[in-house]
Image (cartoon, rainbow, N blue to C red; front, side, top):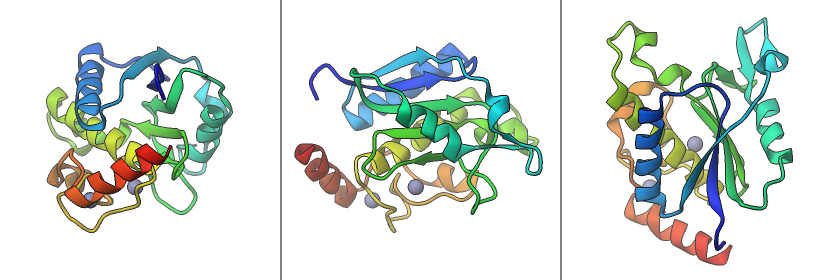
Length: 181
Ligand SMILES: [Zn+2]
Ligand SMILES: [Zn+2]
C-alpha cells in the first residue's frame, strides 16, 4: 500500500477550490493520500436517450479496466447525471471491496433544486459521497446508524443530515479490512 494513493479522475472541468476542499476532507477521514488526475472521456458514448442520463455501470468499467500501479483506488468524477438500471439516479457507485468507483456532482448542486448556489455545501456533499463510496471499496456495507456516512442516502437531504465520518462500528470494521489488505 506504500506510495499508492486514491486517484480521482476528473472527467470534466471542476472548480479547483471546491475539489481541493473535497480532497482535504477525504484525506482527513480516510487517512490515505488523494491524487487528482485529468481524464479525457467522451461521455456521449454512455448516454441513454430514453432516460437522458449516463450509464454508471459502463463508466465504472472504464475505470476498472484502467491500469495504474500507483492507484490504491480509482474514482471517476463526472458532471453528468448517472444511473444504474434499478434506480432513478445515483450519487455514486462503487464495487464492494473493489478498487473502482464513479461519482457525479449533478444531483448535489443546490441549483438543481431551485436553490442558491452554495460551494461549501457542494464540497461537503461531494466529500460525503466520496467517503461513502470509498467505505464500500474498503469493504463496508450500508449502516443503520442515521448519522454515519455509510447510512444509505436516497435524497440530497439525507446526505445533509448525516455526518462525513464513520460511526465507531464502521470505523472498527474499516480498520480490520484495511489491515487485511
Ligand atoms: Zn452505498
Ligand atoms: Zn456506521
